[in-house]
Amino acid sequence: MRSLLDTNVLVYADASDEPEKQKRAIALITATRSAGTAVLSTQVLQEYANVALRKLRLPHELIRQRIGFYRRFDMVTTSADLIAGALDLHVLRSLSFYDALIVQAAIVGGCERVLSEDMQHGAVYGGVRIENPFVTP
Image (tube, rainbow, N blue to C red; front, top):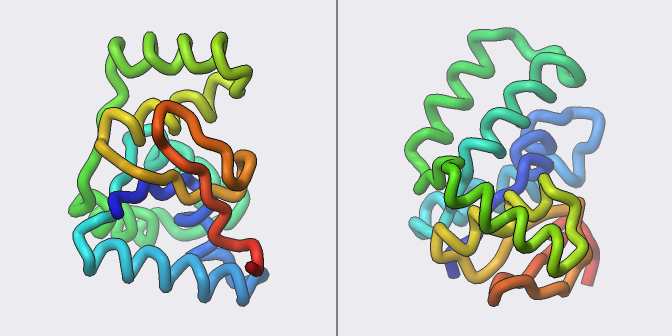
């Protein structure tokens, strides 16, 4: 199942102050990458780099290494068409614009789900299901 990983999954993989979430994030990244089902968007990488610099205070070289690893995932590039589709989702489904960009990237990337802590678990937008990988079933 193709899955778009939201920024929080990448951030938790480097967040040593959240050991359970870190372990889960690393397992998700590893499993989806190994299965060839991991998808990222350029927006997710931009947000990850910003959080890694400002909040996690990771060294630049470590962030470069992470970006080098993540660039091997299937990547959805933010384009004018993607932004227009996200704007429609924002208006029609009352998503925040940035969440709509994530969902639209998942749609464009052929994903069945978005793995995110930031959106409503179980919601479906444009055929893409939101799953919070950090909730306990």
